[in-house]
Image (cartoon, rainbow, N blue to C red):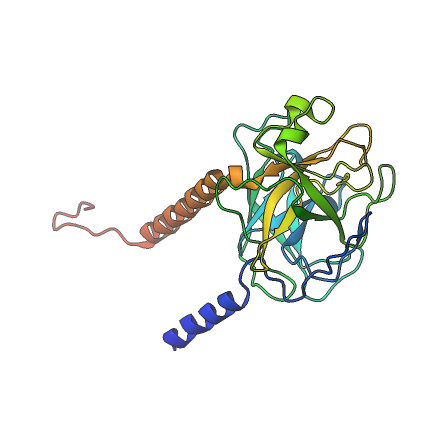
Length: 295
């Protein structure tokens, strides 16, 4: 029976490999954002806080595994509680295949700089692992140090505002944002010194951009084998508005933080093993020596 169970778990895991949605996205060249094909970005999550007394969407994020979510450090405020909604298409309706999970642990980068938006990255440990399905799946992550070429076609996804002063989206949106190389993005009339080599810039045509509410969400880029990697975490845009010419959306570059991501997840797993060990030890009755003292 145990052998069958192990085989079944392996089959389920392999059936839902990272970055390969059961329902592939419709990749159009629509200039502005558009409604996504339902559940075609199954790693997209809605990060919600109770800051207003009820749960509301504050940021996006990316499911990296059954129990870890990637988002932006600036999305996190220590005064509030957070939860993660997974498998969502519309935030306004109850949907089959979606679920909410509490945040058991939130780790923001220790060197996050609020003023300069540096190291704007955070990881959320879910309260319990999720089961992958057609609506909930993990994205792949790039190899350490990978830098996308100028012009690489990537997609930003999120429930952010549809325009600078417009309402937030009810339906998950996608928009094509070509990558802007660091040499261009760091020019004086672009983002200058604010754009570091640990960031990815994308867009900047003055028409399409990430906007308020997209923060923390993924920059999705497709591999030659068809799988999708999360290369960026939405970090910041222009204070003049969402769609400003030569002010592309700036993302934290995931490939620059692979070591950090792995370290956080490893230490968390070690903490988990230690807590299990402590529980086991506390349940063991102390053995007494012949003299009656505790061994």
